[in-house]
Length: 382
Image 1 (cartoon, helix red, strand yellow):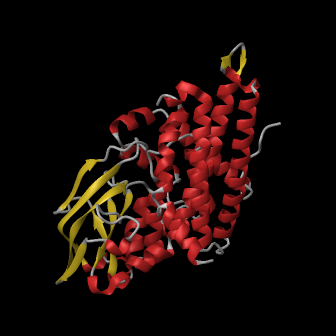
Image 2: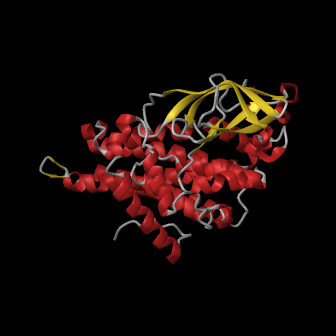
Image 3: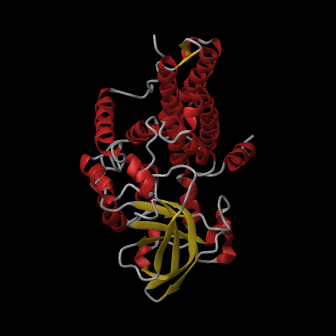
């Protein structure tokens, strides 16, 4: 009897969708993963293939070019990539950007960008973090001021996922620095043929090697007034805050999938690897460690499934989403570390999935709001 990690929210239609996603990843993404890690990005062609298959923006209504599904469809994509250690396509960020358009954009903005994003023709990125401002969004220095029929944006952003391949970037900037949170707005920047916009370089990260993460510069970039997300100044901070449960729950989904993938890879390895004349799986220490790992992954699965179901039902609050992000990402790092130990020296090699998972896991506790911020959000609700 094996441990059952099946999500409680699956049904027959989602099972068929999962099979389709898995085939796409195995046939199209896995073969090119090593080259993508060397190059630092997956290239536009893979995004186009994903769009053709219909696995992008799967929870955006069909009226805007999306798949017409719900949050569970996005979770399936994140899970299937997470358990295989595939990080090159940040579909999570792409979907988050799509939801900013869907939840806060004007009708014209939705129809202009969402169909292209669903087709994979326009990769989405959101530019929040700056060299001197990470989790503290009120500390950003990028400015945008009105100049006739345009806004002029000046500043720089760093650690931007999808930044190198992005066709559209949502830029968080201050339109009125004297107003604090109420002085922040989000602007839509089309990267093609955009004077003043520069992608400086792909950043050299310790993990997520196949995912393009870049520094972006906005040197007096001019965008039409119609490119203000939602059409009203001063709404940026509130737009960002309202979509945090979506982002943080997806991070939790990815964390539990990585735990399950690491567990299975380790189980397979210790059954084959021999030491002192017997398989590693026959040693009591190995079996007890695997028992602890499986239990932690099972607990994480129960928590994440509850949050997914609550999100679909419209009941998931910011505090619970912060809890799931905090707990699952901490557990992911613990689980992958324990799994790597059972691999011994081979676990430290990049050619082994567990080694890549180990390096990839660490960022989970930082992006989407550092876990210290999650604790602060939770503490304020006590």
